[in-house]
Image (tube, rainbow, N blue to C red; front, side):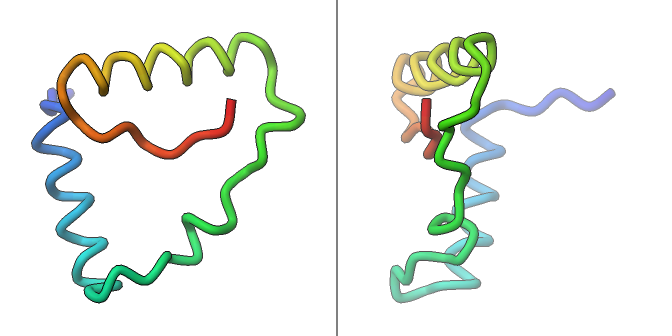
Length: 66
């Protein structure tokens, strides 16, 4: 299994997004995200922890509805 650092992974994601939408256009993927209305409490907790970890690492959190 390959271990990735969050900052390196997100840098790659952001670079690919820039190639796809260089002028800051909201990608279809971003606008069609799940609303989270039927999400389980466990999944909500996981998303909150991921958000807190990203903020603690001074990284912009991934958009998620919880």
